[in-house]
Amino acid sequence: RHCALNNILALLILLSYQTSSALQIIPLEKKKNNPRTHVDLHLAPAANSNNFCDDDIDKEKPFLLYKDYSDASRQEWPLIKSRASNILSIFYTDVVVPLSQSVMDGSHMMSADTEPGESNNFWTARRYSGGVTNAEQLALALESLGPTFVKFGQALSSRSDIVGTEIADALSNLQDNMKPFETTDARNIIEEELGSCVQAKALLSTLSSEPVAAASVGQVYKAYLEGYGPVAVKVKRPGVQQIVEADAQLLRKIAHFLEAIPNPISGRKMIQTELVNGVNEFMTRLFEELDYEREMKNAIRFSSLYAVDKGSSRHSLPKPSAGESPGIIVPEMIPNLCSKNILTMTWLDGEKLVNTGNASFYSDNIAVNATAVSEENLALLVQGIQCTLSQILETGVMHADPHGGNLLKVPSVSQSSMNGGVVKRLAYLDFGILADVPEQVRDGLVCAVSQLVFARDIDAVAALFGELRLIPQTEIDDPVKFIAFKTALEQVADTVLEFDKMSTVPSLKFDRLLEGLAGLVPMFQFQLPPYFLNNARALGTLEGMAFFI
Image (tube, rainbow, N blue to C red; front, top):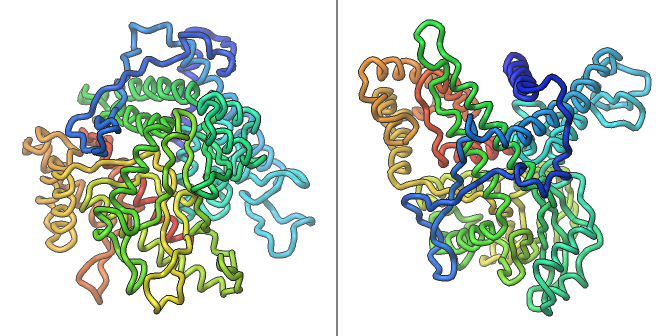
């Protein structure tokens, strides 16, 4: 990890100072009117699209086509260099300097002012009285770096088993507790984009004075609308689009650079995987999150499939308990109060699944044992994993960002007398990333799992990688390459599968699976289709939340 970090830093320095030894850092917010600061992004319909089918909703699923900025577009270099320098500056001042000082001060050692019972390791140490911990400093640095880096922090916040509890706790603030922008700016955006209609005026007159949650892309206010009751109003951060556009070009340059490194022995590329395509895919998903009109359509589509009592595919999901109908809670979108920078939806009263310390229910405030709450949360999280698997394998339409801030436990009226009138249901929020898994891939996933778990047929699993669109079929058809791939895959299988003497079905260590596949990436011509990145992130996040609980 340290070697990889050093390599990335060296590459950023190279990019920053390639054409000049002293580069002036230009704040991104001051370059809005400069046409050179905007990446030229084109939209094109994706093949085999199977999106929401209402006549008034665009049926085509867009994806981003990046222009080639390698040589022909030198005018984009000022943007790339400025962003690279900005990243280096933040990393140095907000990470390297404070953490180095903490190490030199020995503040991770036991100190006289440590409170009883307080954790005293490096990440919980404070450099001065009343200051932030080292873990919180790391989270603040990611927040300063912007949405692209916050996404990585959000993913790691659910993996306390990997980064440790202290860092995971600090990174959890990136889900919905970031520094907000001014409410005055939010009100101006609402007034400008929604106009002066009666509902827009009602929205503004009842809008909360402060946001109830703030994340990397936008922040949420509470308001009231007649006919709907309490509603949530999500407003996009000003200037966030320009930052993400700059990150897209910088990461693409880095990927181009890494792809071009030759193997000194064979002369072939050192890294066989299509890194540029991987960057394009990752950034495409992030740009989708910036498109609130698309998110509105995603939420409507998701609700039409999985919502309680009306979802056409809700019967593919597990029931919350005996006697209850299947399905999940999805907030209702209010389309006439949505725009490219605003989302308005019904308000959901709920509790995060990872907030295990809360010792009361919603309706009657009866104190309950924290362990019981944890078991209840874990049961809902298991339901969430089952829902995700159903979305991946049965319907092919999945919520691809189920981190701790996007899953809630909400009280719902019970349909069975056995549950005392109230049942806790799983609710989904934030539909910026909705993934489509092709039928061919769904079939391939089922076959691959069956062959791996029950038959332990590595040959069959390796052959299915072509059908799963992870490796070009030409690689599978090459006997020499196929044997090498099969051998490497068998080593991964030995690592990720744990067989219990009491069971014929092994347990799968998902974190080890990702690590094992990451080891295969440089060796073979891996492709990174949308479903793979989305599935891996969704399942990895849910598994991490289960470990946390």
